[in-house]
Image (cartoon, rainbow, N blue to C red; front, side, top):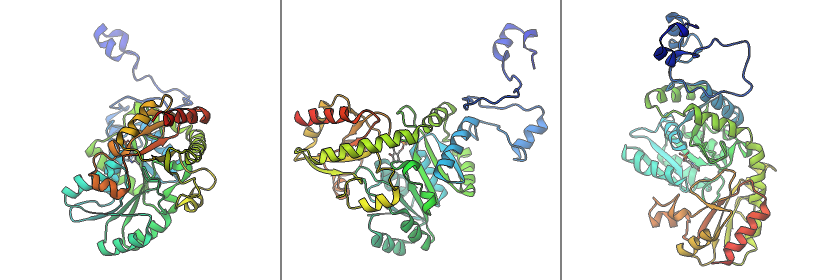
Length: 400
Ligand SMILES: *Cc1c(COP(=O)(O)O)cnc(C)c1O
């Protein structure tokens, strides 16, 4: 291996120190492997890896050790057989939809209040490609059952906790209904995270995540993942070799590092969100608070049944009494600790105005059908001390 010193300076600049033989040791934490290619002792070995007869890596678009470590960790936490990582949550959702049979002539039934970009992905891209899309209130099992029987879809798509009105999907009942009609159930589990709920253990066929949010948890990486059966993951893997929507090793490393503190962060975020929701309920400038942890939430009992005593998630939303867009903006501008930002699920407490950001691409009619008003503010609780968050909210509500 150590032939480098005999070569020219230019050649040594390229090759010296590379491909050191692996020793009899294992690094305690997974290194970042930013290599595109791999070399083997012989062409015969490389050939065996290509043929799938020997474990190994050949090219970064196919697989990478750092990305694999992240995929294994998420599969374990979600209670699934295997996982496939992607460059973003939207890429993961797109891939899961294709793998579950979204193609010309197929029908999809989906929850009305899906994440804005997912809604547009279905309504714009997939519908234009010849897929029929039906949106339903996924909290109404009778309507879901009737729609499934009428439309014979290839898949049903819901979110465990929806955004920004925090509705809860009754996954096992939905899985039974979907499977009864021969449809697969896809669940976007981003808001709950496997700390609160694991859809595959309740009959879902695919659990998808925007890893960008709770799983990575620090607001510094864009990533997605699909967790499913080993057979489905093989389909996703072969498809992504061609599509190339891969997660890079640096991002996979950040996501894997973030994952380690998921339970600690979620515990604090659920506690903070609960306190903030209860506090907002008693504030005279607040007309309404949406949070599954409040007894008046229409699905409070269901949430308790699904999440046990682990909490009700880190996201809540509330309507400022009589507020239009400008009042909501004034409130958000007056905050000092809570940051207006177009994301959620990380360590910072973040606020967002859904009607002009996450749900901006919907028409005003679509927004009002979903129940998103101009006075609605979404809050994603961070891990700060809750007294400081409440003091910030108090001051900003006093200034509008
Ligand atoms: C953010 C988000 C997505 C999209 O994920 P990206 O990582 O931004 O591509 C999908 N679903 C939900 C519920 C989200 O919050």
